[in-house]
Amino acid sequence: MVVNWNGWAQTLACLESLYRLRTPGARVIVCDNGSTDDSARRIVDWASGRLDVLPERGPLRRLSHPPTPKPLPHRVVSASPDAAGQDGAHRDQAWDRATDATAEPLTLIVAEANRGFGAGCNLGIRYALARGDCDALWLLNNDTLVDPDALDALLLRLAEPGLAMCGSTLLHQDAPHRIQCQAGARFYRLASLSRFIGKDRARHRALPAARVERQLDHLYGASMLVTRAFIEQAGLLPEDYFLYYEEMDWTLRGGVQWRLGYAQHSLVYHRKGASAGTGTRRRGRDARARYRLAHSRLRFTRIHRPRLLPVIQCLLLLEALACTLRRRWPQVRALLRALRETAPPARRERCGREITTNDAKENRRAQT
Image (cartoon, helix red, strand yellow):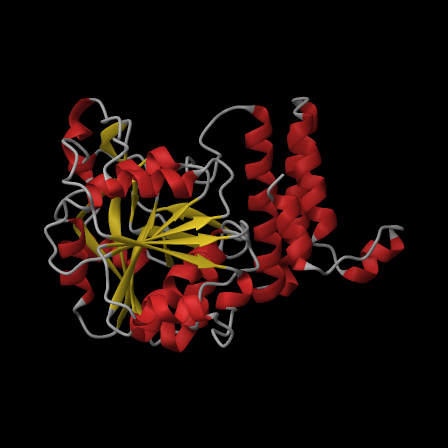
């Protein structure tokens, strides 16, 4: 299941690699999260054989080239927020007909607006669960290329009883010999921050799988295979973060009875930050990423560690001070905006600002 937002070229390269998987019976769902770059039409054109993907250069070219045979049977489903509400109770007839129809190799779900990573994933999760013919879902970033054996390795590891979800070995696309992340991250509660396990190690010096699993606090959402049983028990991905911290929140809601796994031989090549529009050093995008990360960090702390909220607020103020000394004004404004918007209502009222608890409004502002 792949979420696309204004990144059709990367999504098509990802799809080319997915249709090289050696796993029989795997089907792909793409959720277009309210793109404004005509992504949905271009994905349909690709599936119909009217659009080709520019191949990657270098050693990863084999993962997406030559193109897979077209046309590829596909289905397009329009999904408004009302058509697939959080409780799944409100769905229109088109949605019901699509879930009852014969499964196609590719399903494209088109959302009306970008309501965040969690909401985009949940559209695909609801669709897959409503069909009733899947035991696990592979959540994958659109800025990835996958090895043909990646899903087989995940399924083999997830077969162990008690595992809720399983992660891959994430490698840098621009440096395939270096590890971006082994499955996920350790979470440092006092700072409410995560650190990737195995970050920037050479691939031949990867940590042993058993050691990684002992350190894992949450998986990295760029590649995680999740069991249907876990989703039915823990619920859907949280939608109130827009971006970042969804994986940690989901893991906590699942409870201690579930374990996390690591499939060391599941290789996924990731262009970090591209799917979120943050994989660039341009100041505007860097500021948006900083805002979203700070906003989600504060929200997560307020929900799960409220006593630590003053500590996190102080840390972010120090971060804003450091940016001020470097004259990074967009980053300063981003951090102060996150602090202001996640402050308790009474404090915002004392500051003379309008009290806003409408999450949809915050999400729309986050997109800017």
